[in-house]
Amino acid sequence: MQKVFYMHTSRTLITALLPALLLCTALRAQTKKAVKTDTVKTAPVEVIVVDSKNQPRKGEQIIFQSQKTKKVFTGRTDDAGKFSLMLPAGQDYTVKIKSLTDTSQYGNLSVPTLADDQYFTKALGVDIEYEPARLYTLNDVHFDVGKATIQPASYKQLQELYDYLQWKDSVKIEIAGHTDNAGNDNDNLKLSFQRAEAVKAWLIKKGIQPGRLTANGYGASQPVADNATEEGRRKNRRTEVRIL
Figure (cartoon, rainbow, N blue to C red):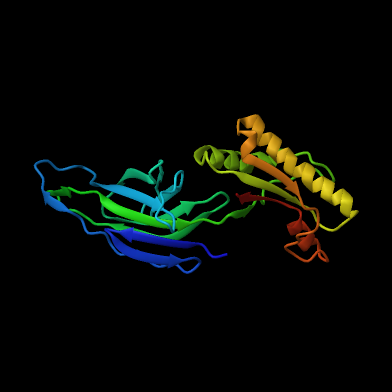
């Protein structure tokens, strides 16, 4: 399913449909004569993130990466879907949004260069309309063969899932376990459920409330690839998170 992003800069609407990316128009600086000059000019930026119904999206992480220096500036929205940050002037920034399992680039932001006797008198407004996916595959969560024992290499992505649930404290999720079609169907169904339960137990141990988590196992009933190949079977052995 294609993600849809809308971005307003200085209240000018920019629409970008991934994977096709459109560049955002340059922001217009509000300036006046300054009594003092700064060594490094910075621009105040106010970010607002809402969904398609214009409701604020809490806990969304927005990333601004300088195309010149590669330095990264980030912020995360509050209950009102807002945050503020300062960006060095005279640079172009790649704007990204961090989801549960990846980071999506959808446009560029240009912050104007100021003269020595100028400074910004108003914050630059960046308004984003964002509809995230509701299904994610935890590609880096793995288990011992034929068991529901979580391998240590999985902890990094599980920590990201935990952090996601901490920031989005009203979200409930289903943890869905899947297997390939090798072996007995009943055994696969049982194993997939045990693996989903293992992820659930890990999150509960970290402090997530049990009522926010549902674990289900689907065995080999929902393949996403051809079980006739090893690559296909590898893809079918997976753990998914569905936003409820």
